[in-house]
Length: 113
Image (spheres, rainbow, N blue to C red):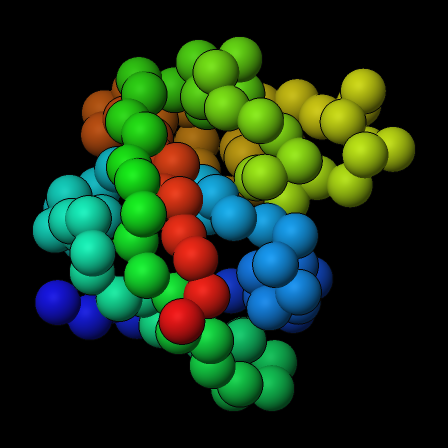
């Protein structure tokens, strides 16, 4: 199955370069449909460029707080110098604490196709 997701330019570039291999999302209805081996097409919100990736693993958690403790943050899109300052609160600009509590969150491990 193929899924489409929009991405801002910076995380898009990180995935395109192979530096970001885990995409973080709310585990909502749409993301619950994703399975191992599926294809994700990421669409750059500014340029419209697309990247195709294969789903290698799925990591579900109750909150980004839990996810940040369990997964390697450099794989989640943080540069080495940013990791000491990385916080699960960074994700609150996209998903509220209430949304996280209601749906849970997911780390989608990907590989470029």
